[in-house]
Length: 400
Image (cartoon, rainbow, N blue to C red; front, top):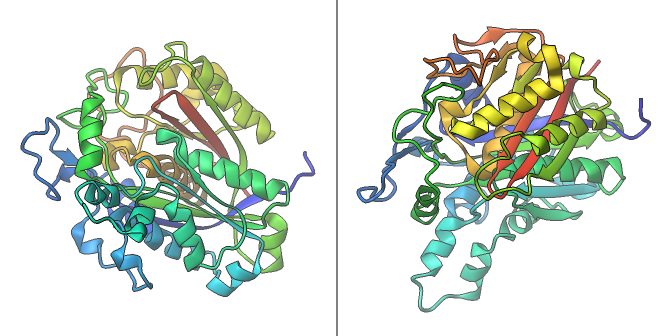
């Protein structure tokens, strides 16, 4: 085994269409509930798709923090998830300020509501302009929690969250930080929705990953946050950590804006190299949390890539797509899915893939379509891909 520092997950936080908190997320996933509902935040009359993975309005009343209530709603989601993750890791503002701490935040659209409003403001103040910038989130959140180390915004489309985890893991491995706050967020705004509709990847029905009649994804909103620490830092303060972020890899298809290479060569490389980075053999993988968008070629290509890398093992393990329940959370998608994979390792429960009705001969793995599954998971993969051909894969391992 390598002598490099181990990277541990010591805290998590989430705001999702199931509500505020990781507990709400996990309860909804295990129950197999469908959280997609009509969008009421703006008039959807002229839009082909009128429903999405919307955070319940009853959960918008977040804890009071200076200035948060004035922020873009997506940033409020992220701030709430950061607070939960920090508290679950038993860290404080003073701990982070005194540590060699870093923050990495991921998003697709950033503070979309802020710059949508800015478009119509003929007397735009400098502060309003600053709040609309993509890099505002790590600056604001870093200031809020006294994080004086590296700060970064990662935007690699829907692979952004896992890419941010990979970036932070490298900071920890190379001694640039001892602890990192890593998050992803996005919000459904009319600005974002109009662009997403134009991609023509959304369905007007249900999200049905790996089903023969799948017809597209549905986008959603929310935030996910993980606290990463070196093993030495976590041990020194007596932190509990049941899951290790063991490996990662990020690359690009270099093929097409929205379609994957049908042979899945880049996805295969991403999974293989993430396993190599984790010093983990394919036969040791017990679960895959897929990107699973329910688009025709993505599901077929991802299935083929999993079979190429894992071989016969691919048929023996439960595989799922939680997008079937909460939608595609854009810049928050992959980190929320990685939180779910970590919970699967901790609990031995694999959430289902819902809405599946008709088997597809091109998607012939065990997608856990009959409800949540009890399964001993020691090592799991979380896949993510995104517009522009980005792929980012992380490998999680149960601590001995």
